[in-house]
Image 1 (cartoon, one colour):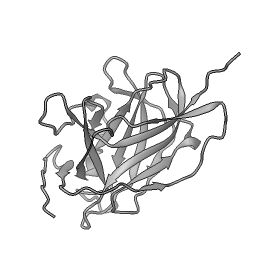
Image 2: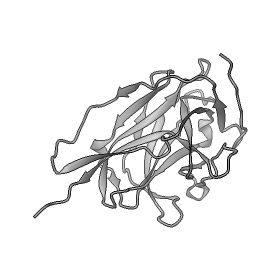
Image 3: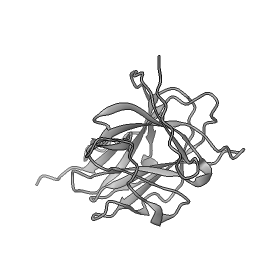
Length: 224
C-alpha cells in the first residue's frame, strides 16, 4: 500500500510528522483495572480532538530536547473531579526506532489563554510502551489523586531520553483534526515556551490535535 511521508524539521529534528494512507481499527489494552466503586461519583469520558479521526501520526521525537506535547480538556461539568484514566492513542512505530518511556503530566490551565500553568500531579508518572503496533492504551492514575479542576486541565506526554541518548525515538502518537486549537507543546522544560502553534492542517479553521482521551470521576449532586 502506498504511503505518503511528510517530514517536518522542528526544534533541530525534535519531531517527525507522518501521514499514512492505510486505516485500521484501534484496539484497546487495559493497563490497570482500578475503578472507583463509590456510588456518589459518576464517570465522565472526555474525547476532545478525537471526533474527526484521520490517519496522521507524530512519527519520531528527539527526547533530548525535553519535547512535551499536551491536549487541553475542558471541564463541561463545571465541578472539580478526580482523573481516573488517560488513554493514549498510539500509532505503529518503525522497527528501527527505539521505544522511549513516556512521562505523563497534568497541568492547570489559564482560563483566559488556555495555556498550562502549575503541575497538578505531585509524583512522577511513567508509561513504558511494550508494543510497536497501533492501539489505544488505558493508563490508570487513580492512586495519584490528581484533581480535574472546574477550569479544565492539560494532559501531556514527554518522551524520555534513552540510555544511548538516541536522537529519534518512538512510540508514535496518533494525530487528528478538530476545529479548536487544543494541543500545546514546549521544549527544555521551559514554562514560557508553551504554545499552541502545533498545526499541520492547510484548511482554515481546522487544526491538528494529539489523540488523547481522559476519564474523570465527578461527585454527584446530593439530593435533599
